[in-house]
Image 1 (cartoon, rainbow, N blue to C red):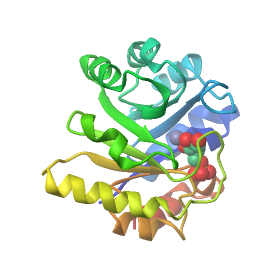
Image 2: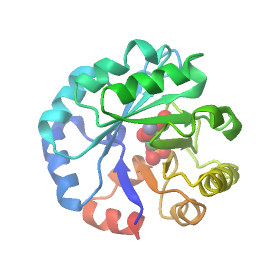
Image 3: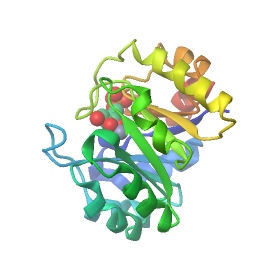
Image 4: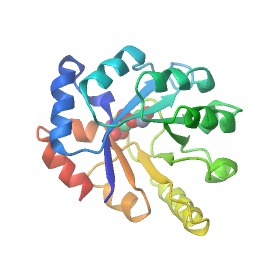
Length: 214
Ligand code: DX5
Ligand code: ZN
């Protein structure tokens, strides 16, 4: 069954504990935590103090998505502050191999992310190292954007590589995931869904979890 990680970017931070408890009760698989630095992406979001609060507030796995430059300087910190999974953009560093090794050395699951404009071929040299590949289905930086349809071809390519090489990495999708787009990403190989604005606009998290997980 496909895994669901709601993106806390769209949660109500005024009632964070209530929200985390409701997510646990809804049966989601973890929470997605978006870190933006105002350099790699044109927006600034949340960082370590909020991660500490989330770590205290839930037993759910925390999937930290680093949309930052020079991720090699920060991955250990995010691991020390409770991340269970950390993903870094291949576009954000000339040292992707080293950063993946850094993440794995902290006993945290490692993921590599590709932007809509980045080909799947860019991650081939490190594809056997990672626990998951995150395919951005919008340009990173903001919640509430429209799903980019061309992403589907990338899911096909990745699924083929996964199959040909007999690998078991998860394929995560992030951006514009809702009741209309979920079916096609899953049928093209996505095994992990991130959903922000669509998920949190629902009153009933159990119901929206059921809609997305099928
Ligand atoms: C965008 C973030 C996403 C964002 C998704 O840069 O990486 O995780 O929260 O939001 P929706 O689901 O609203 O597109
Ligand atoms: Zn994200």
